[in-house]
Image 1 (cartoon, rainbow, N blue to C red):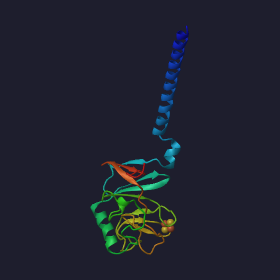
Image 2 (image 1 turned 135 degrees about the vertical axis):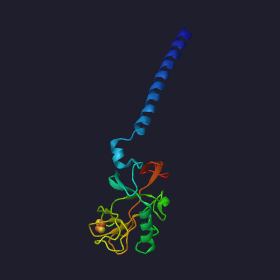
Image 3 (image 1 turned 90 degrees about the vertical axis):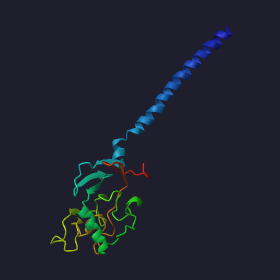
Image 4 (image 1 turned 180 degrees about the horizontal axis):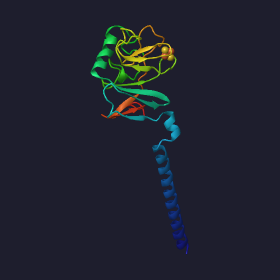
Length: 198
Ligand code: FES
């Protein structure tokens, strides 16, 4: 008799443990799924943004939004890369070697980019945050003979070259920021995530 009781008790414990195990497994899975899919709030706060550049023609600029900021991706032509180098070589720039921490280390180079042709910058003037306009023509009448193409801020006249480097003698103190980013493959850039950022 006591053996029967023990056996049924063992059976109950076995069932109870099994139910608890299944429930535990369900609870263990749910948070994983919940964290795997970022909420709209998390996305607004800074989830990375993918940019497909497969159809971005040479000389073309695409604008996306990341963390509420405008991010520009420019496919620079050979000529554009040459003009950016010229602005640097002619000593027109305040921080030609990107010494201020306005970019990740992998963009602190002559083109301020991972790929020489593709520029990725935050399109927000480093003076008071206006949005510069793209002015890719060389030496237009209103910008003068020292203009090699770049971004012009209409608010107070700051100028940035085709690598987002600020000209000397303008109100903006710093180069345009380069956000963290990486290439998922040749055609897709992930803005807001690099090897050091989740
Ligand atoms: S905000 Fe761009 S120059 Fe002042």
